[in-house]
Amino acid sequence: MSDIIQLLPDSVANQIAAGEVVQRPSSAVKELMENAIDAGANKIQLILKDAGKALIQVIDNGCGMTVADARMCFERHATSKVRKAEDLFAIRTMGFRGEAMASIAAIAQIEMKTRRHEDEIGTLIEIEGSSIVKQEPVACSEGTSISVKNLFFNTPARRNFLKSNPAEMRHILDEFQRVSLANPGIAFSLHHDGAEIYRLPASALKQRIIHLFGNNYNERLIPVEEETSIINLKGYIGKPQFAKKTRGEQFFFVNNRFIKDGYLNHAINKAYQDLLPEENFPLYVLFIDIDPAKIDVNVHPTKTEIKYLEEKSVYAIIHSAVKRSLGKFNISPTIDFDQETGFSGMITPKAPEDIVPPTISFNPEFNPFKEDKVSERSVSSYSGSSFSGGGGYESRAASTKNWGSLYEIANHTPAEQVKIELPGVSEIEENYAPLQKQLMQVHNRYIVSQIKSGLMVIDQQAAHERILYERFLVHLEDRKGASQQSLFPQTVTLSPNDYELAKSLLEDIKSLGFEVREFGKNTLVIEGIPVDLGSSNINETQLFEHLIEGFKNSQQELRLDKRDALARSMARNSAIKSGTSLSQEEMNMLIEQLFACKMPNFSIGGKPVIQTITLTDLDKKFEK
Image (tube, rainbow, N blue to C red; front, side, top):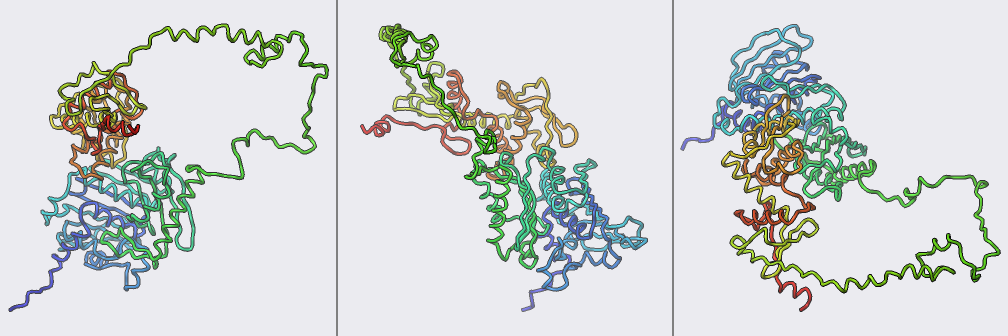
């Protein structure tokens, strides 16, 4: 029997490694930008075409490479950052395995131009599928320019798994944000299909956050800083009132490397305990500086996971630092037993010699038993009291002269109590007559109706969400959602990530009844809203922003179909809220529409909409 184990050719091995290192265009963007940072660049440009599928170009002004280094960098396990195994525990650079460039070269067409600062001429290398096609001297700027063209051109199966351009662009923007946040002292720019998406000058961390996410983030940030013998922590957290229902603005950096760590994330969520509504996530951008010997970064191919030598201590430090910042800036309530601030503004300090003791003055001739008529002032002062002095009888007479009116109510016959009767829940669809029934609203949250077996209680917000959800699903299927034109069109400016998402949903959003069009950089114009919402007092801009936020939440948590997630988000943001007062006609219409739904008994979150309380249950409550 012949031997069956063979060494894989380098081209095949590189393609296998590429499957782990380069999963999509954003993976290549991350690796190339991190290499530019390791090269000491202070200015990095990223140029994309077709969301990185056709072109990814990274231009930096770093140290550049010699001819030999330019050729060697595409070999597997070729790196300038690790010499021996012990170096893995003293890593300060972004890259160290020497796999990224070889993996990218195995699945793309690469053109690289590089020149060191001391050299007069640079080097051009062209590679296609791990094979060097051209190598020659070339005139170029200092630094390195790498162009990755036609990603996955020789692995069509992998290319077919790529998502749409907006979806891939969102992943690239995520990586760009992480790299640029970790390095605020470096200037970055991003261009996609000829349009400038970002131009970030070198700045402090707070300015970098504002440039990335918007000017309105200036008022949302709380600084955090803590220095210990284990770690140094610095960065910013967000105020609780600006927390969102979706993750995406949570950034941990360990030695300037972005990481994902659920354990440390729990430390921050615990610090925000009782300050955030359920299922809300705060913003944070935190940098942990730690001795590289106390961590292991060689855990995951994407290098986003880290193991700590003193994990529990790191957890405690982060939790206490965030908690202290929230208290220091009066975000969380505090109790100070040494000072009562309620009276502090009313107390004026005086010298002891200036303090005058109180005095008492009285009239020695005053006789409370004297029969003389009291002054009008005394009578008027005590007219409301049955214990007035000499004028007590007059005041009593004045207070009792209309005593007979107290008994007039006995002459009125009481109004007959309205008896509310509604058929049972199972018979509602056949016998319910909305305009003839009297309903009651409890705390502006629940609608209560009498039925034959007892009481029916309906959650008004959940009921309206169910009605709108099924209605919007029909609009998305038929693509016939009616729109009401706005008198004054509203503009909404989104983050680049949300803007790309909105562009991918634009046709479905129009099917709901919105009239939306693109209007410049990251901006949309809302010219009309669905007819179903036209009668309500709605801020179009806020509704649209919440629609995008709710869509991301539904897709992340439930992994729903795109249209289903959009309908859920729209229904949740458009429905009447708990605390809204409804007229009898509105309550009747709401219940009539609810029982016309396919699933009236359950909300879009799977919770009950209707609860019945039988007479038997009531009798048990009263121990009958």
